Amino acid sequence: MIEIRDLNIRLLDFTLSDINLGIAENEFFILMGPTGAGKTVLMEAIAGLVPIKSGKIFIREKDITRLPPEKRDISIVYQDYALFPHLTVFENITYGLHFHRIDTAQAEERLNRLFDVLNISHLRERLPAKLSGGEKQRVALARALIVDPSVLLLDEPLSALDPGFREDVRNALKTLHQSSSATFLMVTHDFAEALSLAERAAVINKGIIEQIGDMKEIFEKPNSPFVADFVGMKNLFKSSSSGTHAMVSGLRIETGRTIDPSSHYVAIRPEDIVISRENISSSMRNNYSGIVTKIDNQGFYYEIDVRVKDVSFKGLITKGALIELGLKEGIPVYISFKASAVHVF
Amino acid sequence: MKREPFFWITISCGVVIMAFILLPLIQLMTSPSLGMLRETIQDKDVVRSIWLSIYTAGLAALISFVFGTPLAYLLARREFSGKRFVEGIIDLPIAIPHPVVGIAILSVAGKNHWIGQVFSELGVRVMGSVTGIVTVLTFVGIPFYLNAAKTGFESISPRLEKVSRSLGASMFSTFVRITFPLAWRSMLIGIIMCCARAISEFGAVVIVAYHPMIAPVLIYERFEAYGLRYSQPVAVWLVSICLVLFLILRILTLRNAKEI
Image (tube, rainbow over all chains, first blue to last red; front, side, top):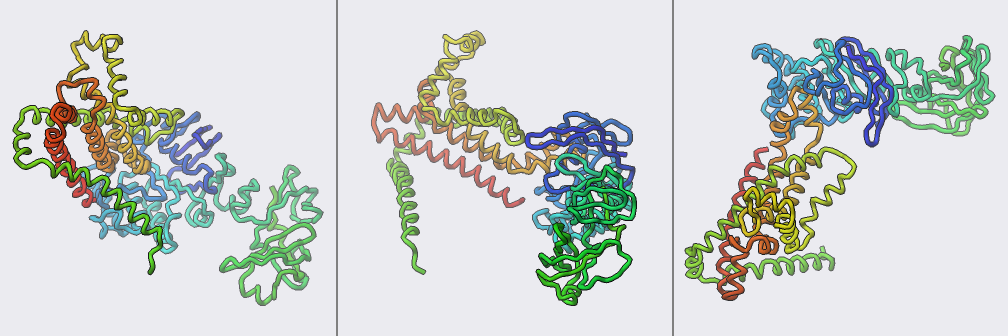
């Protein structure tokens, strides 16, 4: 559906290099990465809004690289909504219809459906300045979808919203994706948001795509230190390996499988690490004794740093477990994790 | 609450400046008798010169609008090397002494320069003509229009235009439907500033065209020939008419401001 080949972009203060990306028809695809990674630039390139240095972009096998934005049939929704401030909600939403040949009955039907799904019909005559963030984003979505685009680009549509509105808009996005034939491409820096919406994703950093794949695959098998860190694999160590175990600063970590010799990192999710006061005998292959060096309150969870020899592990526990275990900085504990929880790359 | 001394300094400076600006103007406006004012406005030379002042300034603003709008838009939207330099050039007419502007224009439009020769071949006369006056007024007025329009365009998020394009609008439709409706107020303010600057020009015009006489030149001539008392009534009429015109424009803009 969307096919990007060897795309290079050079802007004054930014470059995107050798982007190759394929997205299937009607897919919900997510582009993830930290702020400043080049997500928005890549999206604007697909929409024809930034100049391209080299490479090609195809949509439904048609080369659109040189087409102006108005001929691409791609709608875009921005984080800051970008509603036309001098037009009412109704005029904003129907703006695109001026430039498309759609018969009135069909347009009306689409309009009513969008008003319905997004629950904004009561806002019809209001100006954007009089709307809340969630309402603005829903109007922006309606405006983008009324022209029935082949691709909908979403630039961090949830980031500027309050948590309550965020859930509303996220659910609306799901509904709209299911009922629409458009391919959704959404940009976000929030991994949790991506997990709840997309089937497949790409992680982009400093203008380069680090990994493309199923959400599950990216979450469980990151292929670079950056992606591992981005998806929350906070225990990330450089390692050397032999046979089925990896050595991290003299610490032997069992993986239960033969390690590819080209691997240089091991990663373990903090939630896979079990912390206890006594050396519990369990089926877990990796058991170490260490010292608690830091306890960090993260709201629902506490992040516990445990130093084992020269290696610092991070584990997550609930507040209840923290009190039950009587954890304090400086006390000795045992940590253990399964061989299968160790990710090697 | 006890006011600090700094507060009193700001207030007294403000009062002094207000008085400094208003006192001479009020004195000027109240000096001539009503009879003299009536007599002056029946003087054909006066009416002609005020009318000439207004419409040459208007033409200068129109030219600035037509040629300046695309440049202002370009400067607001694009980054390119040498942009600062271009912006510096645009501000030059503000900094150059007025008679020097007149002399500079004459040195290009005069008989010793090929451009002047081409003009005279075509039958266009700059020296001592309305063309010359409009040329000079555009020269001094256009920076004001460019800067105001540029600020207006800059205040509109480029994303609005991007969304409009992605929804199927061409560049031209986008300008007409989105950019212009959001920027026209700044553009109008630019036109008013350009007009105001043009109407007040004297030094450059007097070098390029003493005749036909614009109002400031006429005021200067009456002052030189007959003294303060005879120049005042013309000045009062010029100031009043300009104030009324600008006031009308401002009211029109403010009324529309409430609608958005």
